Length: 216
Image (tube, rainbow, N blue to C red):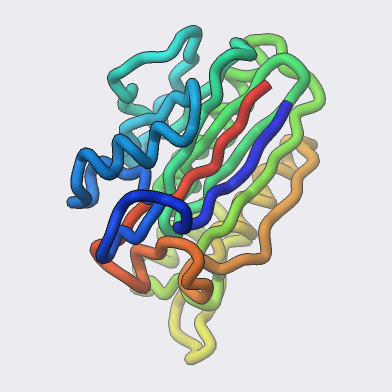
């Protein structure tokens, strides 16, 4: 299997979307996005909606399925998840791979666990998780009511900013989920809000979306 994460360089978009933006929904020129996506061969994207739907892909579709996780057993297809602060989660095994969009809502609705279940139903064993660049727990400031809502489900996601205001650590919450599932993992230490090599919705809005890509 193979996997990687893009940054924002090497594409065709300009302005706020400079330059390798894969998002069709952010206000970028559609022709530029199409050119950017063409740099990733045989790759299935998705229309991400912060939901809990997992779609199994057997062949490429010109229409992005509406979901927040893709799974495939087809070695000829790459899967892509787009982000600009949320966690791009790639799940790899010998015969099945998955790409998952894990934001605050995805953490609460356990989209990662649902994807692991679907992968196992399709024969996956010894799944390894890879978490790409995302906003860190010191930068993801939220209202206290939202913090309480999320930490009621994922206590490990509790955090505070450097100014001692309420925050969420999405990566810590996701790590706790993976540990409970006995899934090995590796996690990027890059914060998208702090590193301008990556798109960040919190830092720059409007902005583009970078991608995590995985293939058997």
